[in-house]
Length: 305
Image (cartoon, rainbow, N blue to C red):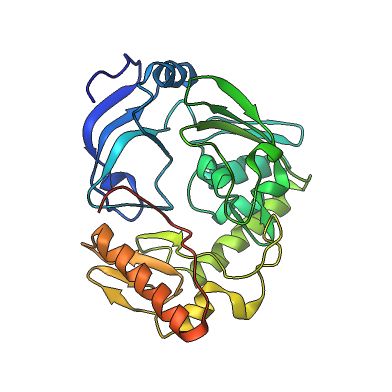
């Protein structure tokens, strides 16, 4: 796979991905492409051999890249895709804009997207995963998104196109999101800032924010509405069923289910992707044996073993 299109951005062959994921694991991608802008991305995809797989990647906050790496072109959105603009109650953000930055910028303009403040990662991943917390979800505030198709066309997507569900959406394979527009309720800038500060303090008190993790490991097991409004049933929290199965603090190699929050998997240092994934599968097995519930991964796992 050497005949790749000419680009203005950066193309790197056999790029190890471990330093680009929050868990610091992962083998090499055949190629890493960092597009300069939307036009560069369009040109690349339009002229790339259709047989070549592409994998869009944000800041790697919710991702395990397996130790064998990815036989694909990994497209990593960075500078050029992190702009944030506010017009009235509408906030438009590039996919590389961090969720926390979008929440802050919106709050300063009196728009309430505060639920994004404590969600790790960038907007592209938040849209793909229909991210949410505190009872609010991307689906609740989503207006539209722009994406580049595998053929290089720039298209606008509605909520219906993405078919938001609990922790997922339906973006066609190989399409790359480039920006999204949200509309939040109006709010007082100072009150919104105070709320976000409270959320941060609460998060730091209950989650291992100083450790190397990828956010929640498993989805909460329950029946959900399209936005997951029903996920606050106490006995159906993932951490609760993990605790009940005796897996808080469990380890394999350098991987551990956090003592502070048992639905957070952490790399204590030197964990391989296999350690992390094997620990997750062991947790799933123990939870099923104890409760009959099958935990679904929230962390995306990609690549070859």
